[in-house]
Amino acid sequence: MSFPDFRMRRLGLTAAAAVMAVAVVTAAAAQSMVVRSTGPSASKYPTGAKLKPADKLTLVAGDKVVLMQAGKTRTLSGPGTFGASATIQASQSLGGNVTRMLAKGPTMRSRGGFTRGGPNDPVPVDARAPNLWLLDYREAGTFCVADPATLMLWRPNMEGDTALEIESAGKKATVALVDGANFRKWPTDTLPVKYGVDYRLSGGGLGSPVTVRFTPVENAPDTVEGSVDMLMTKGCSPQLNRLVDTVSEAETR
Image (cartoon, rainbow, N blue to C red; front, side, top):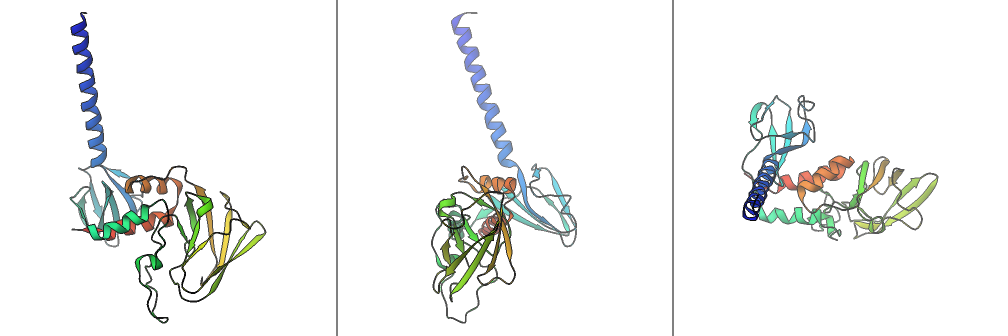
């Protein structure tokens, strides 16, 4: 084979590889993923399931499925039959909440976007921490930790002084949350963050004790889809629900 022929063949293979790579990326981008599924058909469309654009979802009364595609979510409610893909536009004003949710360093904001009202104003029942890496201590379950040294506790109500009791493996720590603040650092000096260990939280305005367990995150993703995938894989359901809810609110149809 002459050098020109070899060069042309090499260029042809390179071009073919590039076309194949684009095709794979396009196919992946077109896929939808189930990020939440409730109702009678939940087992039929489990969380984490990947759907092709041509797939159809048949839902019955009481079903609710949240799909994610290209960093945006779409909520389907039964009864009815729905295509797996659709055009979704995101609200730019609410998109800032998604950016804050994914930020590596927690954004110190009161009530996660809610302004401080009067002492008797009720806290919205759906108030949530404005950043993935803030530990909302009302939420039981596995919590993904990006940096144990900067782990912060968060409460929705910033009025009044209260004390949160934390207990693990026979050790206890008390965290004081003072009036006007809904953030407080995890007591790493007296009760360091350990992975795979249960921590029992009580007081601090909780109606009943809550148990949390930590798991590490080495490299936190920058994208919504990457974060959803990571949280789903590690079983960090409270943070996953927080992110999905924030993205869903940013939708406009």
